[in-house]
Amino acid sequence: MAVHLSTKGLKLDLYNILVSNAFNVDLNFVFRVRETLMESVRSFKPASETVTEARVLLVGPVGAGKSSFISSVQSVFSGRVINRAMVGSSSSTSFTKKLRTYNIRGAGENANEPTALVLCDVMGVGEGESTGLTLHDALSVIKGHAPEGHQFSPEQPIGAETVGFVRKPSTNDKVHCVVFVIDGSKVGSYAKSLGVTFQQLREHISNLGVHQVALLTHVDQVCNATGSDITQVYKSKAIQQAMVKAGQLLGMATSYIVPVKNYCSELDLDENTDILLLKAVDHILQYVNLFFQDDSD
Image 1 (spheres, helix red, strand yellow):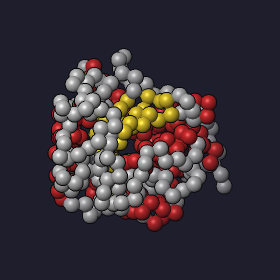
Image 2 (cartoon, one colour; image 1 turned 135 degrees about the vertical axis):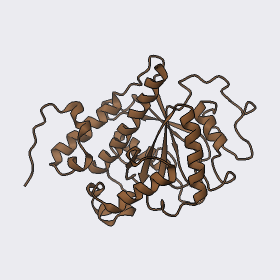
Image 3 (cartoon, rainbow, N blue to C red; image 1 turned 120 degrees about the vertical axis):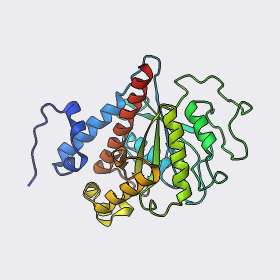
Image 4 (cartoon, rainbow, N blue to C red; image 1 turned 45 degrees about the vertical axis):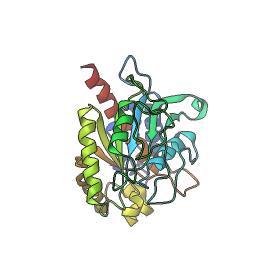
């Protein structure tokens, strides 16, 4: 029997509703949760008088789902599954070689109006400094020195001689939140050296005053029940265990880690998948604003 809930006083109160609870009510209510979350992202403005866009950097191992997350979020706002950020199929070689920024755009009548959210995609982190994004280059991007389109190369670190190097980056050029993207289906098999790299990077990022969160991707591959029904994501012990392992890998409390399912082979959107993605974006934007609040103190 369908559960009919009053929508009186909806608006921001929905942000306090657990996703798992939202999944158990009627479809009309789920639709309203989704639309309210979308409007929250569309209307988001950085808590700063001088910054117009929130720059969020996605960092993670090769194949973890950074580019897929960008495309999935844009898919939600486009109303159809699209591949805006190019995605590779290899799990050993990073398909993304350059710094690319993607401004998430609205949907419907607002399709041509960009939101204030900019997602930055970079080369995947390898198990060694010579196999992927280096610590030096990651920090250069976060500090705002790297130009758009910069092609990463371990042999040519970003420096003053780099074409387009931003010598005096403004707050608009810098990254305001870093999101670590971890493949939930592989979190138990990552090399220890990768964890060391991530924790070193996290320490440097913290020293810059930039907040960090994490996404656990491929949750549908972690748990068969969740793969069949994404609404089971917060009830799955396997996913909870994967989140704990991700926290250990990153040296991060699980309260900063949120599970998501990216669109990969699907042709159509799913409202429950959309809600997971939108809740992840909402989680990220909360820490973006903490950056600006800390910066103004």
